[in-house]
Image (cartoon, rainbow, N blue to C red):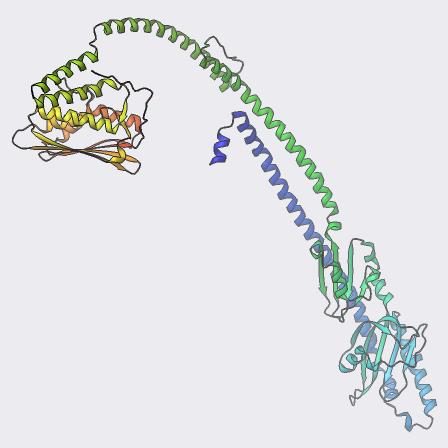
Length: 598
């Protein structure tokens, strides 16, 4: 509420400027942010989709390569002579050395050569027979290592334990065929006699790592993307970054772990080889172009915001400057200068207002002149009236002399009556303000009721009960008197019974309620309607204020929810409820004028 109050108190130009600024700049900023976020999401989704398609291509290419490796390992199964050689017991042969040499030559020159011709990607082939210490081999640029045996290698045990299917061996060091071990990919399988299901040996077909690199040679052109393949042992067998080949997958991920959220990671798995395919790209590099677009859009947005500010400033000024000029002229009029004229150079609302202002100042100037003339006549009439007016001090002093004379003659009832009369006159003449304190109003009513008791020979009794917390509150002067007077004059018409009048004043929350009740004759609906319309009382009353006048004064001063409510029943009495707001009465009201008396 306080912020709204501050905005409400600003001048019109500031309000218009702020309004135009909000209407232009806020939608502009919101739309820009929305489209930036939308463009980012579309761009990112397309990039991720592109990576996914690339990964799928990598999976497809690798699966074809691995399927070719598997196919190559199947061919020896169909060579019957190879199976016979592997099942031979050379110790039973007459010419053992000769048989071994001929069998070795057959396997190398026929089986292996045919297999390498079928798949030129093969680097070397080995068969480890079960019934012989020989190792059949063939390869390119190889040097046989006689001291090495693979039987304790994990991959070898995996091949032996899965005799029913070929096993893809991820990147490992080939130590049998080379003097210095080098990394290769292999397919291994157990050669089994179809008839007896006896294990005859282990076939190992090796492929050099550079064969795999040639399959994905085009990936190296994408400098912002790191794409790599991880085998089932968690080893990187290929990467667009050559330095990563041979590393553990955990080592690769450890490097990017601190700022993992700054990377996009796309992952796929091959159902043929079981390998994992990853595409990783740094967000900053990926979004470099869109960041340039963002920076350009931000600059353009700032320029549009500045243009919006300038436009709002000029438009608000074009609207408010004529109003400000008119406001300055009004201030001159407030100081009494009516010889001002507003410009009438436009046909809009301000132009109409300027013409109305000029007509108003001309009429006010004319009215002031007429008022001056009428005031002169009024002062002359007041002077004549004052010359014929009786001084209130003379009445007070005369009543005081009568009071002293009554006291001297021990006429106490006359003394009390005169004293009440003095109080009533003092209340009526000393205070010229429309509002008085409830304490003053109640004191006046008390004196007035004592005078009425004397006049009507004590035909009624009265009781006044006022809550202490309302004595200092304000009320309209003569607010209660017309209702008290009406009750006595019209309600206590018969002499056959004793009448009672009760006046009670109490607080009701933030309001004050006056309750005036009597057990008089009551009022009919028709009389009550006329009473509420009564503006002036008859000539027999103390003053000319009517009940309807009081009701209208209350609504005029306090609003529609306040006023007078009358409940009456013929023969039983009348209750008047008067509701006013609780208002503290100032101790020294500037307009209060008190008349003393001797």
